[in-house]
Length: 588
Image (cartoon, rainbow, N blue to C red; front, side, top):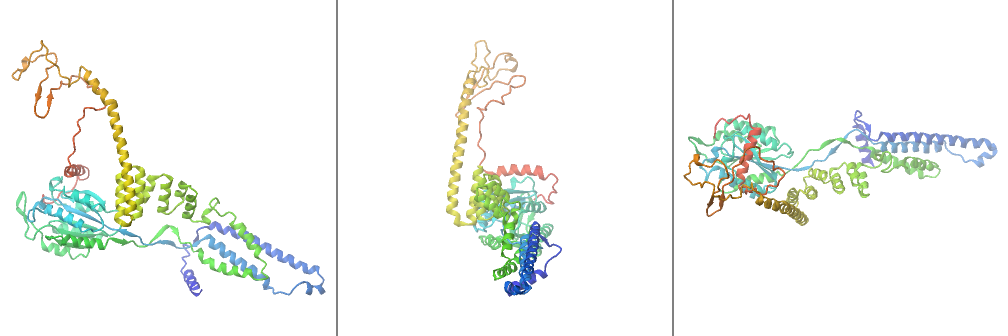
């Protein structure tokens, strides 16, 4: 009890009266019926005194017991104070906002690989780029446990892969990286840092940028140091070169090596760690250990801009203490409490005009969800997790997937996978399920069942798509082929030489070629195929064949190496985003 009064005194003395207000100020209207009840009590007490005038004075001592004047005033006074405390507590006095507890956020690591021409130097076998690619594999094998992303840079910077926990796909794409896929040569650190800021702008946890390069000059060192000082992230530099260096291919007079004084100045920053290349994996293993140790970050407590801290509970204890006196003999005011409770509590519920007086938003949403009203429950919930579940049960899987994506926990990824499966986005669902396993291995059995069900659904969908495609081809394709065979203008139909045509040979001169009639087609036989000379296109506008199915299209298989795809993608990005980019001082 002493602790309560001490805390109450401490809270009252620290009230910010400028921010003081009531969350449910309409509850203060309950003072009106309280005033009516007090007025009725005063009137009834006055009527009771009138009875004394109707009894003869000698008999009054036998008809009425003597009592204290406070026996009438005290019950009424405590009744007013107790009910007033209830009303004020119900109105929700507040003067400060709620503090959101710190949330644990998982950090990421972004690998930036230098693909400039100087990285083709062979002072490290087989060359610097190939050795850096081996180091990427060793780094991921060391299991830094963080989601990793990959970006390549030279004269321009290009994202290769977004942040993902699937290290296998990062290893696969890293092997296709080379200098020839870069659209602009050079080593442009300012462009790289802008791209890094773009990729990590939504990362709120202090994370790591792993820079794999061969040499850093004074200007680049100043840019890196300035970026680290302004950022919440750390910088890990893996130096892929030897102290003596070697000549750059195409520039035999230029020796690429690192200036030790630049590294010495750069290493003075506590947020920058420089690691030299080693023959074993101890270099990248140390980096992976540092990333793993700082994997989780607890965010600072923040004040919610919408939620205010309801301090009405402070009025509960004095109200309950006063209620204890109403059980004393002679306190004939109990019926007033029943009337007041009937007046105040008769309309409490979800269907009342002000359900927020009685229940929180989340509790209202839970009651609606229990009644099967999932869409209404989703609109009522304030907690994103409950809201996402309600949207999922209501069939709004798109909204559910978006809300589940805000939850980076294992349960959030698993629930997002279920929602994406319902949307037919099976590949994204499989990625979400795999992320759930990485975060919580105990979900392995449950996720395995969901993955198997997802693959079965995907297989059925693909089978239906293939069946529909074959049926369309069989329905329309055979008829078109048959009609083409009978069409006299078919360009693939061979025209047999007629007797009136002049036979053509290899030494026939142009002036002796016939001026009318169809050309005789020649067949060229080889061990591969037999080719026929096609009829030359006629004059005029070709007929519109947009409504016909292309039954004679030859499908060519795309190259399996993703390097060519990356090169074309980098060229397109260079034209779109790097038109006015400031080129590097050196072409290597």
